[in-house]
Structures are given as structure tokens and as C-alpha cells.
Length: 273
Image 1: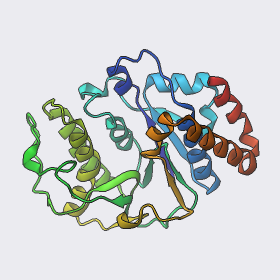
Image 2: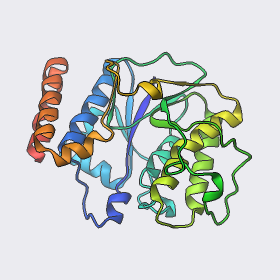
Image 3: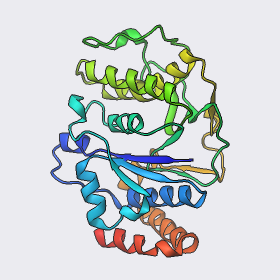
Image 4: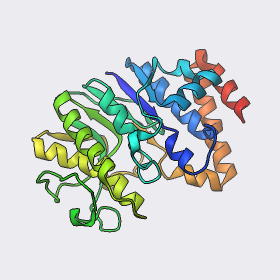
């Protein structure tokens, strides 16, 4: 099964960054995410914008992916990159041919699921007004949503298997139209997770597409060996250098032991500082 990672510099640029840089623990996790996908027989593409393509080719890390595909607009096609910091992945999904897996760089799959006609996401999420408010909360200039159900639980899309072109086009069309017409405000999180995660679940329900998840939302923190998602651990590693060093050490040992032919990746990331 084909998969893709995505990377967009526009959100960091909106915060004042002048050049691409990626934290070391993020690079190690992205490397393992790509290498495990390839080990399991899949092809993985890096979908990105111009700055990220230049960065990965310049660092020597581009061989991690079977292909680098520049398909995310540098300016997110006019979408507010601060408000929709993950918007680039939806442009990437639109550019890829289904069936395909959209995989976050901080999500590692050691045992892929069985792929079929169902949409597969990482897990469901509960609806809470602090994160997933009613549809009446959102303000848009032009886009009008179809008659979506507000009862369907959102889908975490750190992993998303899109089974067919029709659903992919419907979902990405709705999400990109929503992001383009959204009225700028301070509730960035609510708008972003709606466009990416709640709309995904709504589009699947609206089209009658069956849905599976890799993990049960009520058992996310139980031990299991098939998947790793850094998620909130990234902020913890920024705040605790010892945790960061431990994680990086474990990643390096895993690469040296399971992917010895890719040991040069550790040297490149280490040299980047």
C-alpha cells in the first residue's frame, strides 16, 4: 500500500521563521516512520512545498522516501497558515491517488492493518465543546456545508487510509473549501481539527463509507506494539532534555539494529544539531 508524509513551511513562516528547520527527535521519528513503512512492503512519498523539498534534498535525508513530490502550495493557496497549520496535508491528500495512506511523520506503523473498502483512521475522538463545538460556532464567508450529522465522532487522522477517489475528492474538497472561506479568529485549534478530523468522519458517514480504527479511543494508553504516535510527547521532550535524549537514543539504536544500511541517517541528523 502506498503512503505519504507531508511537510509545509507556511505555518512556521507565519510565525516568523526564515528557513526550514526540524527538531532532531522529529527527524528520527519521521525516519523510523518511513523505514518501517518500506520494510512492510509499501512505497512512501514525501509530499511537500518548495522549501521542504530543498531542505530534505540539501540535508541528504531525501532517500528515506521513495519520492519527493512538490504538491503543497508554498502559500497554501491563500489559506491562513497560522489558523490552519495542518492544512498542507489536505492538499497533499488531494494530489495523491487513492487508495493511499496519509501518515503523520510522528506516527510509526510496525504492523499495518488489512486494507479493504473501509476508511481506516488512527482512532475516534470524543466530542467536547472545548475542542469540537457545534457547527453553528463556525463562521465562513461563502462555503455552506452539506447536511452533515453532528453526532458522528471525529477521527484522528495521524493515520488515515483513504480507500477510493470519490471519498478522497469529497473530503478534501469540503475541507479545503472550508479553510478558504473561514473567517479569521483566535480559535485556531477548533477550526483546524474540524477541517481535518471532524469533517473526515462527517464525509465518511454522509457517503455511507464504513470506518475502522487502529486503536480504541478508550484504550489509547494501554501497552501495544503495533503503533507509536509521539503526539503530546513532543512538547514534553522540549521541556525535559533527559527525556529527549532518551528518546533519541532509543531511535538511534532501533535504526542501527533493524535498519543498519540506513545508519547514515543517524549521522546526518546528529550533524544537523
